[in-house]
Image (tube, rainbow, N blue to C red; front, side, top):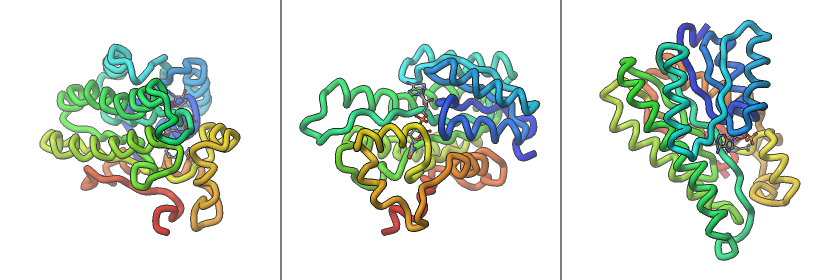
Length: 251
Ligand SMILES: NC(=O)c1ccc[n+]([C@@H]2O[C@H](COP(=O)([O-])OP(=O)(O)OC[C@H]3O[C@@H](n4cnc5c(N)ncnc54)[C@H](O)[C@@H]3O)[C@@H](O)[C@H]2O)c1
């Protein structure tokens, strides 16, 4: 088992890629804190882990709220005795619409959850990891942080910001043996993509291009990348965006 004895906190663990990672990390021996703003969905993830003999607890957390972000890290340490891996994965697609049409509220909401939430997650995880003597942080960015996507100004800006935050955290905390990386998924088959495809929003355009492999990705394929970054196998990887997009940005 690649994460035996490790403690992992995963945000957005009630759905999509977060749920896939929570299950995979638990199968690889980690104790998992499955947090989500949708508590029922996080509990479902925990129940699935328990059925497979894994150990996990669920918690309702809004990652954009600093009290919640602090509480999720503190509670994980209280229950499991430390924190080794934090996967800041929660995010929203936000409203579609060209930049000048976007409301201030819609812009602020995407930045609050997708960017500020990642910063808060790191802010409150880092002291625990320093105390532990090291750790691995994985943030969810997106190919949207590398290229522009029409109708997704706030989303693209937030995801580019996550790549930048990842670099800064890596160079500031490398001395404490804390590695910080981010994943830039392409189009992945999750409830988020189902929603935006139906609305003809953010990824209707992305869906045209999909990937050079002729299919969209599976949540488990991103979870496997996260597992690699969480594990000691990625011991020399830090400060980097890992693009897992079926070749989308290569064209
Ligand atoms: N699906 C894709 O194609 C794709 C591509 C690139 C990046 N991403 C990113 O991957 C991450 C996971 O997305 P997904 O596709 O699995 O989506 P999803 O909607 O299936 O899952 C996201 C989860 O985050 C939770 N969440 C939303 N706001 C929250 C908040 N404020 N606090 C805590 N939890 C919150 C939701 O309840 C949900 O369970 C997101 O950051 C998303 O932006 C997705």
